[in-house]
Image (tube, rainbow, N blue to C red; front, side):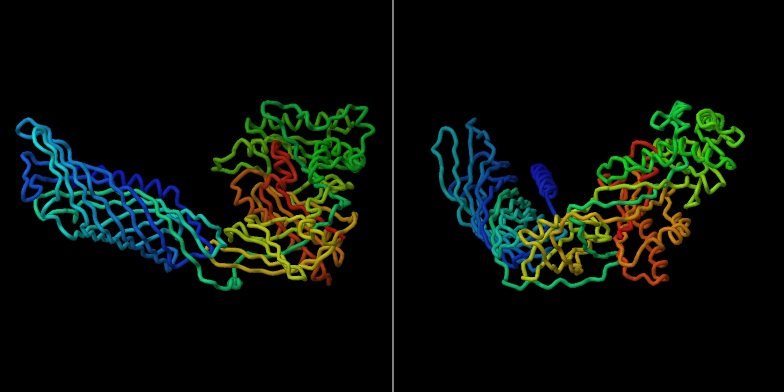
Length: 640
């Protein structure tokens, strides 16, 4: 290829890359099969070869070789698109191929110029290909040019100018083109008539473009322009959504109590860990420590009174209770004289520092609560009994190691510790009034949506046939205010349809029903239990078998609603954590359902979700190791 054509090639490649960078895979809801329009462009023509004999009457003394010029292009066009990927197009119009050759010096030392004004009626059928069925497309095909104009203008110093027609011009030339374009939709997707503005670029290489029967003049063309197209869709009825069997998708809809508060009797799990700050062997200041006089009057029951509620009504209360863990331990040791404990300290600096941690706690309990030091054994370790950092781990080690720099509290006494899945401290009972996070909301639970769907929408139809649409949504749970749905109505019965599109492009439809009514403020009552997990463990829920079977399940009355939600800390992959929390919550539901079925309770409704590390729903922050440990949880609310 000639050097000039190499430059053209690079320009075309660059233009294609720019168009490709703006491509999307978003297709119109209804795409017309036939499109019509017009296009306008600029032809940048590049000349190569030799031109000297202009016609039978004029052979110039010095041959012309290279040149270039810009001429207009305009056409009427038709496109046929039987599918989103493949199609064809046809352009018929005016094609300007004129230009100016580089100036030369005649033997008489006279400057000479040659400018051509050639044009063609062009017929350009092309095959159209849209990768992925999106707006970006490629096209290519033959070009048939029928010569319409063949004028030239020759000037040479010291002789008259010559304006005439070139001789030996080919009447018809057949060449080829390749190109790319991008359709910019100008109309709404619901409109039957679609309008599109389509910038495009194409390259017409030199082969097949010798305009004359003599000499070796050839040209290449880079065309850049824009097309305006319109098409009309056929009037067709909207197809009914087809239910597609998709693994892992369940759909449920429920309404939170409008403007209500939930009174809970909460069983707070108590971590049997005390975490130490890096570089210090002192008890961290966030733990509540009492003077000897204060410890004398302290009782665990003082912590059962209701605390101030935050967004979830849970985090502040529970951390306040947990940060009294040393005082709770001292009170329990004082109330149960025959009990003993073991304090096992762990530090990455070695067992010696780990034992110092344990001795620091022992000194506080002995001196402030008057406990005989023989009842408290201490030991030091490099790793805690159940470490978070695992061999070979490389990610987020700072967070994991902060959770492993601690003292484990152990005891064989059920008065101090309770075997609820791994030696937790015996939980604390307290009353609470957390704000219902779904108060005044209709909640759509689409379990598995994030894995299976691109998006989904909700269609609600009332008894009068009025349809309301909400979405699109992408998360496993979505909410809409009850007042938005009811509007000016005080009550309504609704058919609720979830319409999703799977990542493979198939429609998914699931249905439910819902009754809504404006309700006065009410105060439902309930019970709350929590399960805590070791790092990255879902199967440890099996160790809560007895707790769920013997303690939680008997408290669930027929007709109750059980809300179960799982959470994780922020360590690890977000998608993995979402799955882990869902697995934990589902396992807890399975155990409870089995026990309830055996006891003849069949009218119990479960709402189960896994929120992973979602910070907007996490019970706690993630700044402190104890907050991260408490976020590894499944919370069970029993609403009577």
